[in-house]
Each structure stands twice: as C-alpha cells, then as structure tokens.
Amino acid sequence: MTEDKTTEANEVVVAEVPASEAPAPATKRSAPPLPAGVHYIWGTGRRKKSVARVRIRPGSGKILINKRDMEDFFRSDADRISATAPLAAVGMATSWDIWVNVGGGGTTGQAGAVELGLARALAKAMPELEQD
Image: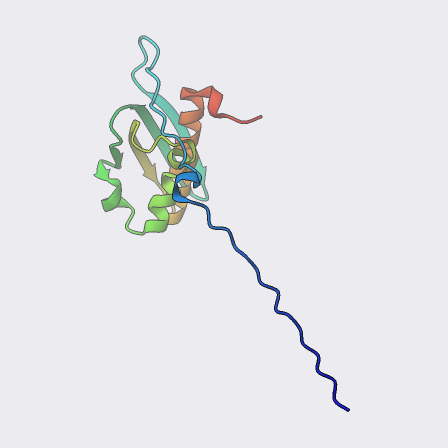
C-alpha cells in the first residue's frame, strides 16, 4: 500500500516598493557664510607619516591638493573617495572650495590625512554637524 503525500509549495510574495516611495538621497546642504573678517577655515589631519593642512571656504566644489587637481594628485578612486568622505557624509560635495598642502608617507596615508583635516575644518565651520 502506497500513500500519496502531497505538499503544497509555500509561495513567498515579495512586495516591490514603487519608485515614488523609494528612500530619498541625502539632502544637499549649502555652506554657510563665514563670519566677518574670516576668509578661510583651517583643519589639520595626520595619518601614519602624512600631515595635511586643509583650508576651506564656501564655493563651488573646487579641490586643489598641492596646487594640483585632486584627480591628478590621487590617481586611485579609493584615495579620492577617502579624501572626500566627510563632504559626502554631510551632503556638501559641491559647497566648499578646498585647498590642501600634504606631505610625508604614501598616497593612502595622505588621503587619510586629508580626510581627517577636512573633517576637522568642517566641524569648525559648522559645529552643528558634530554628533555627541
């Protein structure tokens, strides 16, 4: 005697989120004006043997590192992304003009030093960005 066992397949229904309800990208902020008499905000970053002196002011998003464009100075995408991570984190990628003097170490250490110096300069310029 054979017994037929039939099992029903459990169907999983996946609800798709309409494009209109998808999460919005991070809001873009604009740089606040600097106080009267202040032309730049400075931040210093160090990583390994590298030291970066970062100077920022409200502008159009121009980034110069050792008087060269960032794309010419940092050849790898990972270094470029690392150096500009603080701007991406606060949604201000094109709100500041940035000048950097960096030296010592290799390119990855220099990118890390630029990242820290930029984060410190942004924290000085906009204290409300710092989390407790």
